[in-house]
Image 1 (spheres, rainbow, N blue to C red):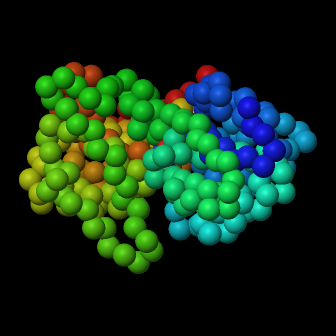
Image 2 (cartoon, protein in one colour):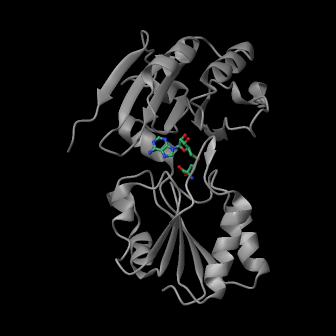
Image 3 (cartoon, rainbow, N blue to C red):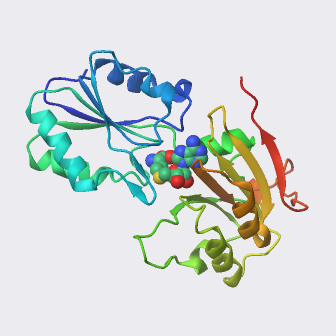
Length: 259
Ligand code: SAH
């Protein structure tokens, strides 16, 4: 399924290896070299066959171990050397994954490159919260947005467009900017009582869920979240239990105990 000199961009899902697609697992097992990000779970990496080379190109915000061009060049070099290349990316490769740069680099070098989709953090977070990202009549739209900016640049989002009470907002890389996000949405007219859920390490044994409200988000994100990646979900679907229910304030919903 993966020939010599081919590259596959493979979605590793949110962390739990059971949330890999069967195809992703087959590709990982067939690879001769695996380039992986910092957010790829240890349980997924354990599937890499013993003979395959593993290369960490780990990117966590602010701590880039290899820049994008270097990663592009490494993929091309490995493919041209006849390796069966798997590029493992957290979640789905097509969502905030810098996939296009890698696709273009491979195609420009005449390398066959393919994509295997994965479960994105927003889907995993919604599942952990026991909610739905859409809700008939109440949440007709889901927006995936990143709060990551190039270092030093201010967050520049279209708050007016995002502050829609009939939409769900899934915010990636939003932990550091939680205060700015809340400020922007409130200033654009979204109610302070709008439910917000935060899911850290979704699908992993260390998973933690929190619920709060938009006007308390800045404090909640600062005090509640740890070092893991976190997805922020804003909108009615983030409310506790009843879709129209409002959270009374910040609350730890559940700390996952080891399965
Ligand atoms: N391609 C990935 C997103 C990469 S951006 C995907 O589709 O999920 C990295 C951001 O994704 C993190 O900062 C965090 O906001 C989110 N994320 C990734 N894995 C996560 C997890 N297990 N739990 C919560 N958020 C996660």
